[in-house]
Image 1 (cartoon, rainbow, N blue to C red):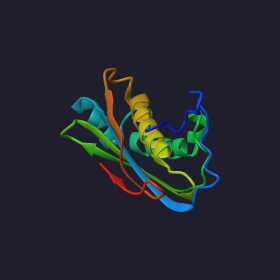
Image 2: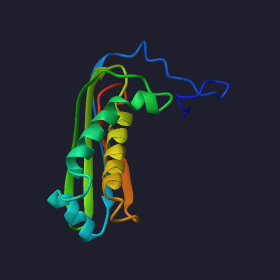
Image 3: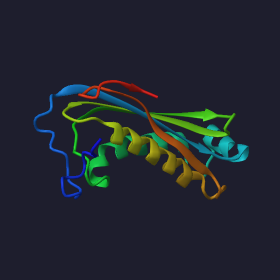
Length: 156
């Protein structure tokens, strides 16, 4: 299967979506960040020195989704109609589970926007508590759901 972001000569290019149908599209991405239980307690209790870790990470993820086309060279700028970023403390990790949902009505999907939102939310959690723990691990970044467009529905 040929890769759509390369032309016949193998050069990267932005995909022409002008002939595609406008459809409702949604994508969900997830990630997580693991940390020790003492750091997680700061996050959960809202007592980190930099403030509300989960609230700040949620806003950072939302803002990041809206900036995806500025960060990923071949992404189309999209009229995003909804972004939600849910962060859940998970004592079993221990750490924070992150789920980002992005919606649009357009000619191309929002998978990259959902991935960007989830990853920037995780990076923000790291930034806000790195003073107390340097060895946190961000992982599990993936698309778990998408729907809309020619390729249809995908569920991980």
